[in-house]
Length: 163
Image (cartoon, rainbow, N blue to C red):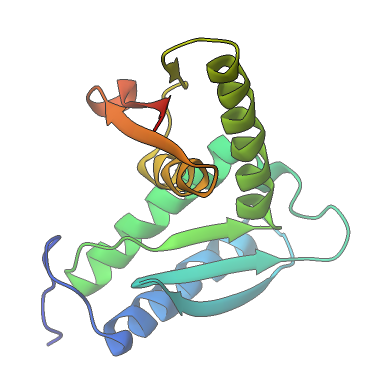
């Protein structure tokens, strides 16, 4: 029996690698059902299991849309939790979708910074997932901005200000 990890515990590298293996098994079955070829890569980064799916050409084009990646990530997390009994914060990347989304968020933060440069005291960004908000906080810090999240659930969003 595997040790149960709660949301507040810090999982070990071995536990995260096991999460990645379970996630890969689930995703391989899903890709087989959809008759989509893809190569899975597993990694552990910043205390999270990280699973990426890559394929030649545009085989993953439909699956790499941000909303689809988010939904598949949640389904994969649930599959991992069901199999391991542990809460999972794994990150799923499909066809470089995470890098693409980071570039989009950088553009969004830069546009907000421009509003601040024009005299606005703060700039609110649209609601987004916790992972995207974390990226926004990181990007904002890189650009010398202060960022805070406000709201609950699906309405949670980030507000940026100058220091």
